[in-house]
Length: 423
Image (cartoon, rainbow, N blue to C red; front, side, top):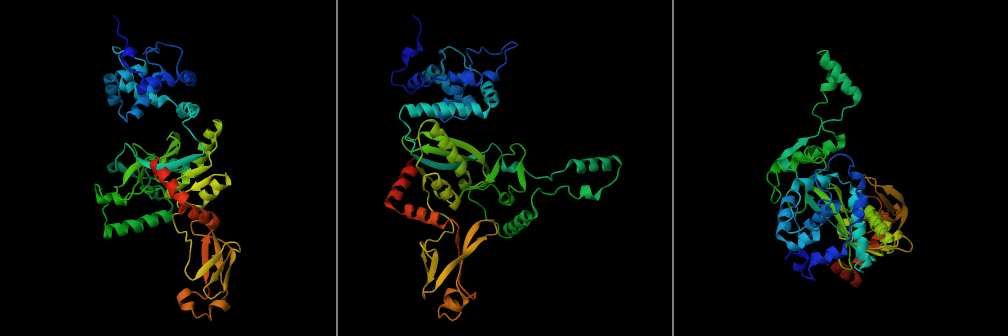
């Protein structure tokens, strides 16, 4: 009597349901151009076809296994996984190195196509609501060590390179060339800031919790890199050691927790700078499935005025806590939002005078009182002791911040926070 693996997998087994639901035939079309038609194939394409490789990667994700060796060991011990992969119990699985090499050959577009297909299947099954998305991020440890960091070298133009070649061949010492050796590729103001920080750290070293050595504090993305993984960036979270990481951003549909978008970026960027591009990606994917996002949940790391404006102009309500220098109330003055004017404690107005730019190029609003109101005022020494008149600077996105602040402390805002944290 022949052994039938399918008969030993229960009807309610997860991998049986996944095999019956997930149709990966489109992968053959997406990967057709990656395979040659001449020569002798080293592996039987029927046994080791593209869909199987993607199934192996999917199993690795579902089982939380990152090692190809451990993944294959797990597959050999699980009949339900073998059934999902389409292998018999006595059939040999591919080698771990073959899986790794083949995975690196596939372009990102193939994985994106597979992601879109699976997302559409989730929509068809009613697992995606679409209207409310939650966004978050996490550092992903790079396969690189802080111990292997090297100092950045200067960029050398072709002209300078040939000058150096001529000088070397003529046995001459060129001051213009040799003087640049060992310099760091960073603007002068960055170097001064880094040097100032390094001097302070050397005088008063502060070891981060779990840090392997204090010298790690002296490393910077502006001055150092890891040649084994140049894209890795130094980053740190409160209470954690400085490490080489990547930045992983993810958007999740709050209906049943289906991932609607995921991407990797450099770890030296802020969460807030990735929100616009991610929003457009999510909206595009939802639109392709005839869904529309109306609300976005995120933590305070995504808070800034541009993001609030960006979302509201696209008819998306941002449930993002206000973070930073925004002040809903100020001492000595009250703000009339309708008239866009401040009024001091003594009843004098402080009108809007125009827009200015901060040192880092951010747009701010400038409000200024009159000298004749401030100089004779009995509260001047307490209100504005260092200036002849009262000046107030606010963000150019004041109205957007105010609406976000009100949403944050509303009853509905507190519920949205619980939804975001649960997803």
